[in-house]
Length: 205
Image (cartoon, rainbow, N blue to C red; front, top):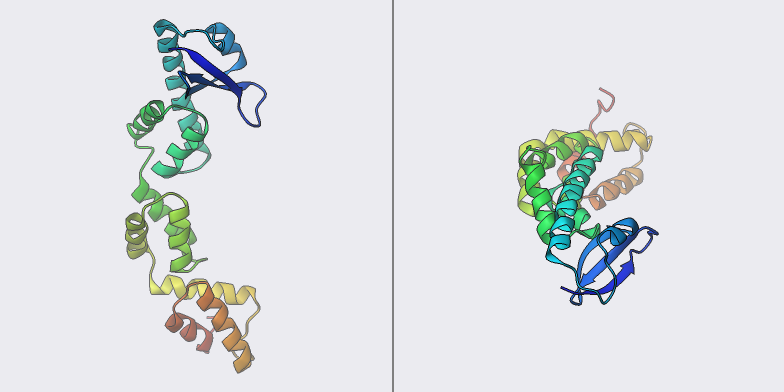
C-alpha cells in the first residue's frame, strides 16, 4: 500500500484524509500522521495499517456512543454520521454492531417514541415526513403511526394549533373558518377531523 495523497479535512485544521493507492482510506489527526510515518509517496506497512485500524475501531465506537447520548438516531442516520466523519465502511459497520449489541439502536422503538412525543403537535402526514427525514423506513413510519397515532390525537393537535391562533369558533365568521380549514388541510390533516374540531360548540372543554 502506498500513500498517494494527504488532504486536510474541510473545516478542520487538525484532521487529514489519507489516500492509499489512489483511494480514500481513513482520517487521522496531524500528530498521528507523524506517529505512523505517513507521507505522500511512501509505503504504509501492514503493521502500521493494522494499528491504525485498531485505533479507528475504538474511536468510531466511542463516537457512535456519544452521538446516541446526544440524541436518539436511526440506524441509517448514525451510519451516515459516522461515514461523514471519514471512517471506512468496514469500521462504520463494526461500530454499528457494537452499539447494537447493547440494545442502543432500535428503529421501531425510536419511531414509536417520536410519534408519542409529537402526535399532539403534528398531523399524520407531517409526522410521517419527519420520521423519513430521521432515516426511518416507510414501513417503520407507517407501523408506528398505526400503533400510536389516533383520530383523537389528530383532533387534539388541531385544537391546540387553533388555540395558538386565537381561533374562537363561536365568534369566527364562515370565511375565517374556511381559511383555517385550508391551513390545516395544507398541513396534512384530514378534512373530517378539521371540520369536526372547528364546528364543535364546546371548544374549551
